[in-house]
Length: 122
Image (cartoon, rainbow, N blue to C red; front, top):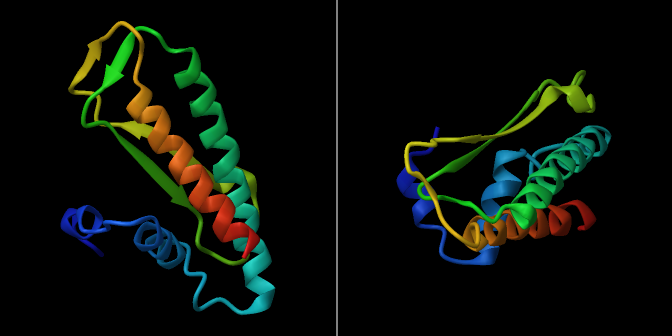
């Protein structure tokens, strides 16, 4: 378990990338399990692309202090199943109408996608 303060202290692209490697357990997996976890990352990327598409089209709302929940089945027997992956937007208490949409949220989605693509190709 890590507190929210750990996430706030990740000040660089590499720091965030290392946190995702830890989240997915990639530094401790043997080769046979690594392929399954990479399928999980690919499934998450598909979910993120869907959200990015919505945010590119969004011209009405801004999502202040909203979060993404990324969850996956860590059991090696099930982790390659794309149905065992969830990407959800949470914390909608400060959604506001805003002409022009939310370029910041879109940038965040693009950054997370880039990180996961980098991780999956290394």
